[in-house]
Every structure is written in C-alpha cells, then in structure tokens.
Image (cartoon, rainbow, N blue to C red; front, side):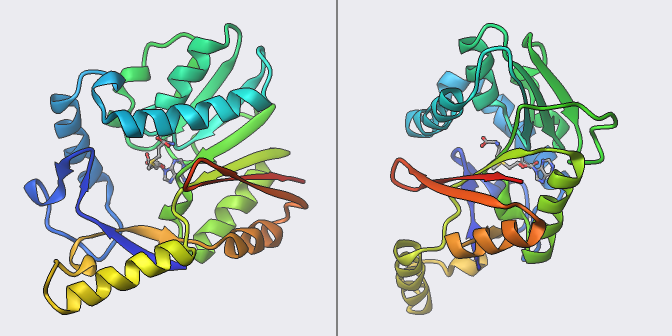
Length: 237
Ligand SMILES: C[S@@+](CC[C@H](N)C(=O)[O-])C[C@H]1O[C@@H](n2cnc3c(N)ncnc32)[C@H](O)[C@@H]1O
C-alpha cells in the first residue's frame, strides 16, 4: 500500500480553500470543495470529457452484468454520474445510492429510480434490502488496511452476496515508477514534493485487494482490467 497526495480535482485547486493536510480530507473540506464545484459546473457534460468517458466506461461495464429490473446498491456514489447513466439507460433498474457528502449529490436528487441515502455504509441503511448487486466505485482508496477489511466485512454482514470493487487507485510497476520519478524531482526541487499536497488516500496492489477480500470472508474473487488503469474486482461469498 502506498500513500498518495493530490492538489486539485476537476480543476479546483485545494489551496484556494484549504491548507494541505497530512490527514484525509474531512467533511468540512468536502463541503467547501462541493460549494465551489457546483458554482463552476452545472451538469455532467461540463466536466472534463476524459473523466466523463472513463465513468461511462465503468457504467457500461456494470450495465453489461446486471438486468433491467434489478435492485442495485452503490456505496459512495459521489456526484452520481454512473448511477445517472445507469437508470437513464435501463427503464426499470432501481439504484440505492449512498453518499456521506450531502452536498455532492445535487444533480441526482430528483432522478426517478435513484433512491439517495445520505451517510456512510452500513449505518445509513437502516433497513435490510435485498440487492442483486452492490458496488463501491473508487472509494477503496480512502480506507487504511484495517478500515478496508472492516468495510468489506460489513458488506458481507449486511447480506450482500455479489460485490464489485472498482478501482483506479492501483499500486503497480507503472505507478511505482511514476511515484519514484516524482519523488526524485521533488527532492531536487524541480517540482513540488508530492507529500506537500493534500493526503488523498492509499494505492493498493491487486494482491493486497485479494488478501483483504479473502480475510473479510469473500470466497470467489475475479479480477478484470477495464481500459488502461481500472481494475474491476468481482467478489462473492
Ligand atoms: C472518489 S469518490 C467516488 C465517487 C463515485 N463512486 C465515482 O466513482 O464517481 C469517493 C466517495 O466515497 C465516499 N465514501 C467514503 N467512505 C464511504 C463509506 N463508508 N460509505 C459510503 N461512502 C463513502 C466519499 O464521500 C466519496 O464521495
């Protein structure tokens, strides 16, 4: 596992509203961030085309393994681009979308077939619902080792049998090389040291994902590659 740092997201520079911190961003950070985000952008189409097509590629993958009429859980939906695409392209699909940053979900609040739940998994889901599939799309990076395993255990304890971890926060030869080059350039003061940005989360190897999923109690684990940098992990009990 390797820590990574970031100083902007969607061309919003963190230094404009917060001091960089060595702790993960807190709710107040995201509240300020999304206030600026929704002043700058009015809909998904205004976001960077490469980012939009990367999310639509993920949505199309999910679409390819579910059926219209299914009941799906998205844990940590963020602004909800994947969920918006899915319900608009499958007439009777129902998605429960969970997101702790209340002001992130403005664009999907009134979309039929998306039932939005403000809060963290599993506490925010106060009743037991049978889902055909649950997925966590790019949220794994916020968890340290212990938190990741306990999150995965809570997915099993909730009764979810088929689970997808979708992640681009990968630690592999390519990211290791790029981090090492950045660190050398940072030490030589040619670029800013990466650890001077905002601590954003953890990169994991495929092996680390597999270990966490097995330790949590998942039995069947299949890993697929999507596009250049995305890993889809299908886990079932
Ligand atoms: C990078 S965003 C990904 C958003 C979205 N899934 C996407 O791919 O565009 C990570 C999201 O995970 C959410 N998150 C973190 N921990 C969570 C938890 N325990 N339960 C639900 N959401 C969580 C954060 O609030 C954040 O919106």
